[in-house]
Amino acid sequence: MWLILFCSVLAGAVFLERVTYFHRVSIRVGEFMRGLANLIQDRRFAEAQMECASSPSPITRVIHAAIIRHQSSRSELKDIVQEAGQLEVPRLERRLGMLATIAFVTPLIGLLGTVVGLIESFVNVTSQSGFASATDIASGIYQSLLTTAGGLVVAIPCAVGYSYLSARVNALMHDMERAGIEIVNLISENRHLPAPGIIEFGPAPARRQSGD
Image 1 (cartoon, rainbow, N blue to C red):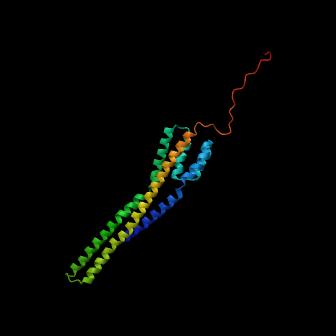
Image 2: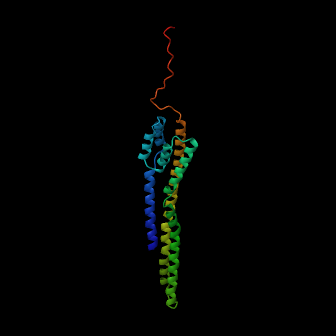
Image 3: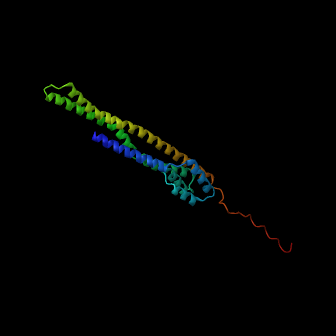
């Protein structure tokens, strides 16, 4: 039971840490990309980089990687965005394996405790030359089954928590893919636009000769 209690505390700490992390790094991709589109259309890439740096998250880091290399070709930008997204996946999935392991192991620990408790109960019956009341036997079985119940009580919330966190990871990965596609399209579409505030003059007309 002490081992199961330790697993429950560890699982609770992991779940709270991951929920806090996902809440901190989640952004509204649509609103962020609309604000960023104005900067990129005006070719203010330095301000766009500062905007990404002011909201640190896996999504903005993927966008930032593309903005830094905005002069690259479209295919290169797609590779840059894909590589940046792959680097963020381990950060999103950090400690989720520990939560899944606890959800899988704690019922086995409880079952092991039950088996050990039953063995001790029957050893006690044997030591009394088989003369043991039904109350003593039932009490030993009752105490040994508590470990199985404790293991299940810990494992079920862990399994639910793991499913919830996995769904959050999938949602963030989807947002990263969406942001990566949008930033590549945005940079590619505005690559050849003239910079704002620059007036282009046509060729100067030829001067007329004084004798004409």
